[in-house]
Image (tube, rainbow, N blue to C red; front, side, top):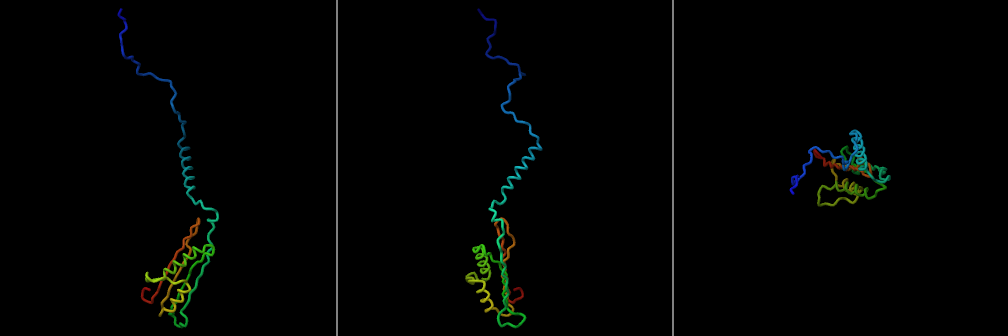
Length: 167
């Protein structure tokens, strides 16, 4: 006996069915101003972490001793005597830094790159004054420009006046 129901392979569901299943993940609504404040606070903490992490003793500045002198050629009695003007700094607590500053200043005194620098500032003064003529002069200077977080900025400069129009 044939069945009165048609043989169908598919069943039709209504197009507008609502399911009452809970969502997989629910996020609480966050006030945007609270999110911005939190983001700024996190950014400030992150940038603050980039500040120096040195131990407290690195925050104290190095003790600097200034050493300034000006020597005129012995026996010169005129107004245009040769002179050597030295204005440098010394770091008693950091002998390596002190040696680097002195060595670099001495390298600034050498005009010819094949020549070696004098052994000391005192030796340079004596050498320059023994060879200087007329109104020749030499200036060597080292000064501390800035100190912070264990960093010391030392400015080195030199000037050699050979008595010409422009030094």
